[in-house]
Image 1 (tube, helix red, strand yellow):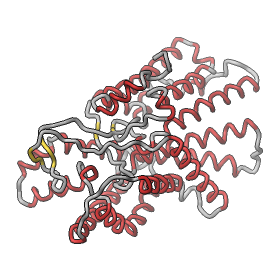
Image 2 (cartoon, helix red, strand yellow; image 1 turned 135 degrees about the vertical axis):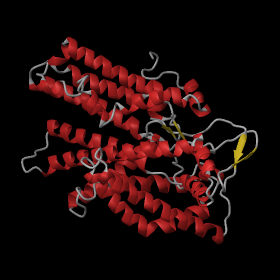
Image 3 (cartoon, helix red, strand yellow; image 1 turned 45 degrees about the vertical axis):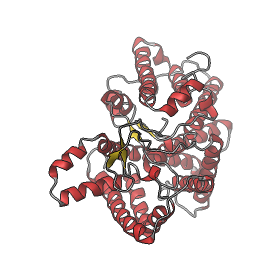
Image 4 (tube, helix red, strand yellow; image 1 turned 30 degrees about the horizontal axis):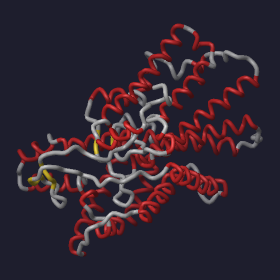
Length: 432
């Protein structure tokens, strides 16, 4: 998923300090910024996972307690790169302006982090499958309590600009609290119905839902990876290398998604800028993820069908060759998703990636994922039945529709329309 960058023009200009509308003909909420090159994304992933796995291997960190180490290290890598390459001009601010905002944001976001953690522990939809996510939030809250205040002080002092503060959730919430204090209940209702406020709570819903899905997958992938290596009977071979690499690839993929939903910072210029408000688009996207896909496969059992079937081709060498091909597709899928930096997030728009595989087709990750599904599905005999073919067809249509509804939303923004002119094909060069 590509992330957001620009909003459309309007007849009002927003005041950077208050977030309220002022007169003006056009509104441009963001400065044009390019996404980090895919090569640097891949370097960051290599370093973050390499260091983390070395720490796990040495025993300095326990994987089960610190499975999120690759995510934090990758955030650090991207933040350092953003600081070193940042050419934005920022406004000079006095200490008296900075301190109240820094303290307010420190308290506000501390309460948000704590509240989300408690929500995961209490809500029946999340409490049973988020133990690792809750552990992460607990540790991150401790880190936030130590470093959050100086972080916000530095951000308000040295990263204050119109592009950063427009759409800041903290300013919107403070504005609502002022109305509540003054008993201006009608104004609160009017503001909550505005698109600018709807974006905030819809983004919150998306992030709260997807963060545990991604972090739990990171844990599962790393647990599988380290489990192979810690097995006393494990021996390196081509077959075992394929199994280990597959577990690691899924962990890297989930880690990219976790960063896309979790991290937002003035230093990395990674805030959510727009959100898709189309209910049909939400349905198409959400059905591809847990827990909704768990209900969907009861009617169209595509993912679970091969598990109950015999391989189409007998013989270890033939099936091993299929495993190699599937691993290649999986690695290409992960590399494509990794190139999106912090923009690996559904239904949102941050920045546009136009380099690397995205210079060839607009949806390379979808292409390689569909190829992976094709190979993983049609290697089994059950795929060659009417029920099997129909199930596969339905799920492939769902994933293609997912890419199409994504583009339907992104086409609203000039950056993406320009990108479509330069990169004509969606999935396969010179075909479609």
